[in-house]
Amino acid sequence: MAMQAARRLASWSLQRRLLLPSQVQAPSIPTAAAAAAFLHSHATSFGYKQVREEDKSKLVGNVFSSVASSYDLMNDLTSVGLHRLWKDRLISKLNPFPGMKHLDVSGGTGDVAFRVLERIKSVGHRAMQGTLTETEEDTHIYVCDINPNMLNVGKKRAAERGYSKEHCLSWVQGDAEALSFEDGSMDGYTIAFGIRNVTHIEKALSEAYRVLKRGGRFLCLELSHVDVPVFKEIYDVYSFSVIPAIGELVAGDRQSYQYLVESIRRFPNQEKFAQMIQEAGFQRVEYENLVGGVVAIHSGLKL
Amino acid sequence: MASSLAARRLLSRAAAARRLPVPFASAPAPAPAPAAMGSRRFSADAGPPPPLPPPPLEPVVEPPTSEGAGTSSSSTTAGAEGAHRSSPGAAAGARRQGGAGYEEEQEKPRMGWSESAMVTGARDVGVSPAIVGAFPRKEAALVEFFMDDCLQQLMDRIDAGEGEQLKNLILSERLSKLVRMRLEMQAPYISKWPQALSIQSQPANVSTSLKQRAVLVDEIWHAAGDSGSDIDWYVKRAVLGGIYSTSEVYMLTDNSPEFRDTWTFVNRRIKDALDLQKTFQEAAYLAEAVGAGMGGTVQGVLNRVFQKRSG
Image (tube, rainbow over all chains, first blue to last red):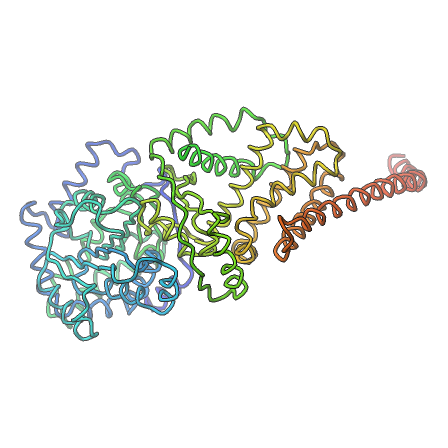
């Protein structure tokens, strides 16, 4: 029943909003102190638990090491397959082009990277490529993840799809807060369902700003806050009761999925996060709600 | 020079955005100036783009328009003489969201009004082509930007001095000259203009393109010296809009040297229209006279009705 409601909402509620300074759930005038306090609280929170800042990264790492093998299956179960549509939407917003240098951060299992690759190689793009001087030889997609287990799963999936000899695709282990790429080397940066798990969000955002070229786009797909009245309650019940139960049944790990669900609630809402992106230096920041706010795609432009 | 080009483009954006809701042609001159100053600052900060060398033209494989492919091969021979220039890239398109977005006017004779033209344009300017993804309606944005830019160029030329020359001409010649000035701006892109027209007529884009044309026609009438009563205002703009559109389409198939046939066409249509307008005016007077006669009767009846009610 909740799935039907979700599906119906998915079909009509693509709401796009530009950043408006007025409607913010958090204190409407974020003073430097308030912003700093929020960021500190994110850095020391592990779901609803309080942890030391130094420990958060390790704890998150443990979560993903344990869920890595069933990550994709769990995604399909908990989002009822909708995550595929969300990622498709992310890629169509990105609008990849032949010759693109793209970085997908915390994209361990490769979903976003495969989509970008397929889009660039698609027939339609071959037609466009005929009129472009640069060929798709220059295309390169980097998949960066802090967790080697997730990367291994991704490499395995790539082999299954026949991309093991693919020279366009690179798997890099790295930290979103300290990327190993050069300044201004990427045309596009995506982070799908990953920014929530980063200890210092502002560092990840400024790293994103650093590695992007001028004209490059930042896109973030993340679970976000639902404000729609009735649906909000249904979603809460689903999140706190159903998801950890599925986690226990399928992956044998209730705690990790409890963390996942709690971390969604602790993450800033759409407006606040958009403000943070703007503070990192991005321009034309806007967000699009999917399924009434269950998921939001934030985008920004580096100029 | 390049930065003034960028500033000009920004001005057109700002100017067009402001003119859109206003039906009055008399937008005061000082009003655009402060915005222009602010916008000029933007483009200056962003840095002037390097001017482009003319590209090596090659035949375009443009799948949908076979006509495009045919005419583009003729354009390659003309291109050697530099007839088809590629306009320098970066232009700042002002957006509400703050910060400048860049639009590229690039190699349209070669690639048409397409995403690949925008991608190449972005590369040439030194901006990542990822920016093309930020435009919600990509090719339409390019066409609309071009329309705004041409409008701004027209207004600049009128303000700069050609407006004085206009005063010596009669009304029909003034209109012809203005329409010709505007259509000449499209001449370098004429091989791909059918594509631009089809983009403009798509349902998602048609409202913006109609608005732009309305503004254009308004400007032309204003420059030609508009003085008329209320009904005339709408009729004039509608008629000129029709003439402009038909001339534009005529120009697509005109092979005469320097589009001579098109200008003859424009002159004849405008003369016909003005003659027609005299006919309209006379018809309006006649209707007034008849109405006055009839109105006496109607008014008498109404007076009696109201007398009865108040009485």
